[in-house]
Image 1 (cartoon, rainbow, N blue to C red):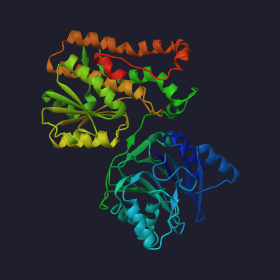
Image 2 (image 1 turned 180 degrees about the vertical axis):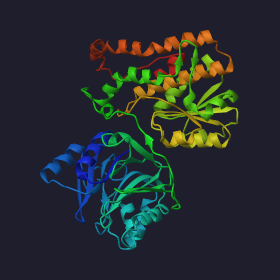
Image 3 (image 1 turned 30 degrees about the horizontal axis):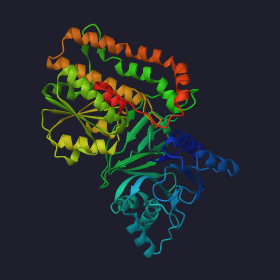
Length: 483
């Protein structure tokens, strides 16, 4: 998990890249670096440790650039050090690359490149990409084609952003697995591994699919598939406020996001509950809404925190709607010959909409005929594009690694789905649905009251902080919470 930022446009690229990296530092603390081009000269600056070390280096020796890329690293191949920090460059100091993912065949590629005379100086798998692309360059303006040829030889998962010193004001990105987004501006464009990096500059985003390549310049964006065929895709407007990605006076993001839970739950309920008519309104599901009646069974697919939300959802679906439900861990679903047919409602749950194992399980269920529905926090992500319908959560950006508001808003979305299915199936009366909706509508206020007790919780935790371990017990719907 690493952070990537790229910029082309009229501004000085350095402060734009640094601001983006600050918003992505939660994705990697091992090292940070950037590379920019100014007046035909490529300049690179890297530092081990936190982003502040890179900022200190730039204060001592300032840089300016017309376009560039930056990276904050969580080390996989190669120890955390300045030498192993991204961006990495080719032999000529012409091509640089930043990378999120793992190049599985990098040793074989490295041996081949060294035999051909390339000089590789780091312990990383990423460096081979710069040299591999260099080997395919055949003149000015050939970076996109060289990247496409390199992709045919790379095995593994990657989000890549590259620049060529000799190709002014252009960045090329490629995706196979980890997410990569394009931020659209006026006379400027951005690339990043996550939306919060770019919120101060744009709300319009394009999301790459696996195998796609994007070329960005101040004049426009060109998106193509693996064969180089142009792809037409409408941008998605992200409604998150940039302030939502700031700490807002809290000590850290996780504390801020704990206190944002009432708002996230309230926003996820907004416009979807009819307290007068005792109905749940999920028109956002689009074409899938009319197909829900055929569901005889619900299959919940997720990983990590979302998997725990799915376990809660199983209780809700079976108790409220009377429909059989089962939960599968995304990475395991494909390995048990799952029994899925057209009467199966497959619900994939993901905060980002880019979780690779969840996507793979979702595709498997679709191929077997299931009705594909997503619960997701990022409209326009790959999961929402592959679903027939999406029930969006409205948690806003979640920066803290331990999930809080994304988890609780997923549970609320599952509760809404359970109530809606219960009404469709006739297993839940209008009166009982109205009663449950009234209870659900009171949850945000109950959360606010619970958070008011934080001072008492602080006192309670002081003697507990010295404990060497904890045992969490729960039964029924509280069992997944204990997990």
